[in-house]
Image: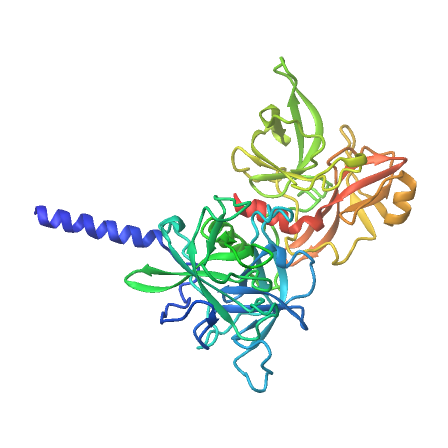
Length: 497
């Protein structure tokens, strides 16, 4: 009996440990052979997950296929927001299609960088590219494995391999895929962020210009098999490419990777809404209403009374959207009030990382507030509609609809024509950015946080879609924060929590 208990305990220990090491894609590349030799060409056919990223003409970064629809790369590779082409099955980047039919090219329809990527420090230097269609796996193309459970600790990994077509000793990009064996050297990197980066290097050689976004791989045992696993993404290093380099630690970002892929893994021709339960502006009696409108109140020091100061908009059952510049520093002073006497406290506030009040033009004046509990939807309390895939450049609005605040009057629509940015700048004497919208002032009750949008017909009936919220006003002009330009940030923040 004692032996059985010991056996059962060992079995559970091994089984649970294995279960903690779950994989992002169960069909990933699980075949291992001797793939690398330090500083030499990778063997053809042994890296089916490597991706070459170009603008259609010039190669500039590497990436790694992690899912039939998604490629992982470095955020600094996509910061210019250009058109991207991903080539898979690639070994020699100079090989023409007629000689290398195994190479398949895919358009990128979505480039998603980590919401906290810092272009100056390169913290959180990781991004995901969504391909136009799903990849069909074969002997030349298959995703790499990513462990998504908690059982893998990168601090215990000593040896890695890095891959790419980056500059070699002659300072030119290599046409042939190169690889190098690296060791974990946590004390060797300057400007090293231990929580989210891996520092790795070799006595001779290093990753270099053009290797950015490429994979840092280690051989991991999972359920009795040893196979290559993605551990890091090449980020930055010495400009001379002769010292240890920094790699974004994939295990730290595994939850963001999972959530992002889950959020964006749909077909573009299908309706995509941030919350499928979003509402319209009509109640069951045919009257105009705003079930997503919430009031933010704050408590003054030394008082138990809450005072109204701005509006907020319900976008999911846990998040509300508002402007940053009116928020108090202490979120414990906030109380979110809804119709019917329902109120919520705020668990966390997510201010846009690039918000600035320079010259009072309030760039990136947007914040998400996470409520202390889920909202129970009703006819009078439901989220506004928002397309997480809608980008600022798509269908720029020429007119918008608002429902002005009317405490004692029947609600009604009011339409506004959008003012072009040049005339807006001249009128108010401030710089207006691409993520802002200007409309003429109104005598109606339009306060900070009020919603501008558009009624649209969808497959589930009429819906009201969010486009902007009132940020500030000056010289008879109302300036809105253009919410559609923050689709990625909103989606990532909501799904990250």
